[in-house]
Length: 433
Image (cartoon, rainbow, N blue to C red; front, top):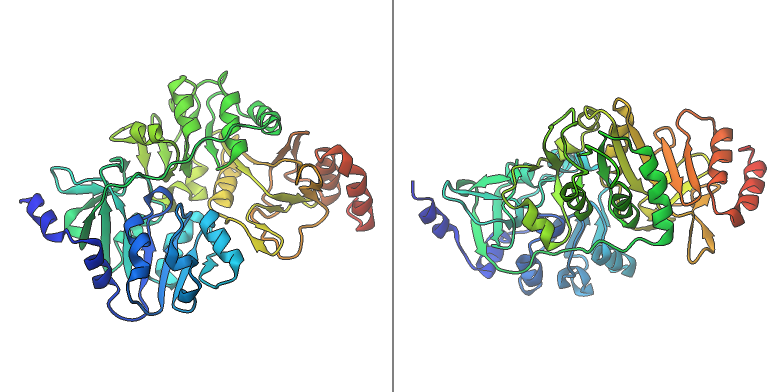
């Protein structure tokens, strides 16, 4: 079979593809997430006519006019599984073109297909190989499930997208339209750790034993942890997001994946976001496998890794142990993502640990992030009955199984010293201690 001929018949320009898939009222389009966001589509969609268009996205990396222009309010809605800078800013503006989809990452795609099935999938793919296969490259959180269930599949084929292994392959016969593009894949740089990040990371490193399998969330603290693991041996990776720090640890011989009880010898992830060197590393690399989010982030799957350690960050924690990582009071900030998935999976694992880390204060030390009660409107990301370890720059507490009275005292002990007296006073006022 001549796959190149099949491929050529499906190549169209961006305007033709948009016109064809948007023909009709009330279309729903799910986009590739994060680095796999289809930029050609997002940068041109506002130039076309449409009615009642909904787009489902996750961790948007670029700004696009159709979301930010008030004239599209009422005609366009971006429903996001996880806010980033562009969606956060637009949601705060009040123009009404952005809303949040509450979810646990492992069920995000399956819940959408069950209750609100999209018409179209539009994302990025790596170039086709001689067997007629492209890959979905850096994300299969929900992308592969969508490809298999929607009416139309549109791919922006980009030579800068790495060819990845695992469950990322899609055959040209399952694609409706190809747009050939050549723009850079978005990258993020590892932030330089602050002194507080370093102190927190040192505490976390003490909890990680040789032979552990680790999951690192997004942000400065998880990135800082990688700097303090260089004396560990035979660590493994089973993670939602593959990060630059993990590649650095592998290159230093710290990560070997030899002691993993699930997928030994392999780094397992469901999406990647980092520097260009990381994308080059995963390109055609059999040591890194990208598998669907409904598998990688399933707590029951995660729990099959002995000595599993999940490391995530929070915006605030209250004295009863409720963790909020996605909103600041009534203002939505990010999303649940895979935090509860990975935390639960780690605590279910043999010799596992679920770690929530946060700075003790914010706003230059003027506000405590350990609070008496979460502010009104706060989303509870990790329920207090699931919480295991909490870490700040002032120490580590293990509150799993502890009473509210014990938790309150322990959490006050790792709050910033200048807030401990007030927290104690309020805890007594509300009969917490």
